[in-house]
Length: 227
Image (cartoon, rainbow, N blue to C red; front, side, top):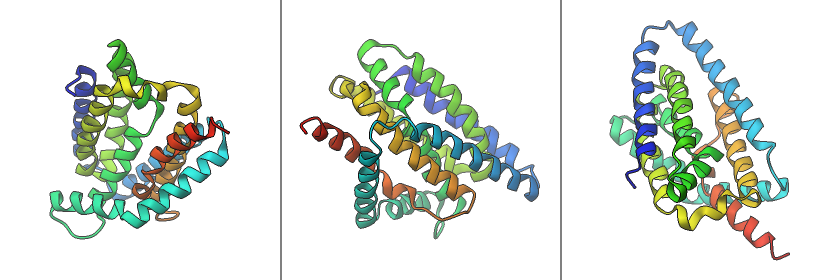
């Protein structure tokens, strides 16, 4: 689980968050609003780009629907929020909670996470995760300037999720094939679009409840091969 590149990725988000937190505290409210909008719009573009990679949009739609229903029944976002709130010792969905959930989803749902972890675990090739570390570090500066310490907490999610993926890379290498990675990326892209919509305060979407969609899309793509 303790992989060099995963550790670097974790540290990059912590370092970026620290920079963003101290920089963000110096900004007046109107500048923070500009940052909110900039982050939200950029997140939308990233999500759209990922979403267009789908092999089968119906599978993506079905996966999102199933995942969203599952998450709603299990109240996943509410439970994640409670854990974050206990750490912050606050009540309700604060900027801390939103920052943790949004940055966690953004940093772990992309194709670079899967491909990078598979390459690191099987081929000992850390280059993709190291590149992701640079990108995540830059993103965390911007996100933390808006959301604060919740973004830093997402480094724990990165360490755990990517660490597990690297550890079990031998069993998950099939995910790197186009049959799976494209629809997986598309589902992650639509979740990323939801984050952008949430940041821009267009609509409050419980993105965390859609996390099971990442499991369903792999399962449905696997079953689809038999038909």
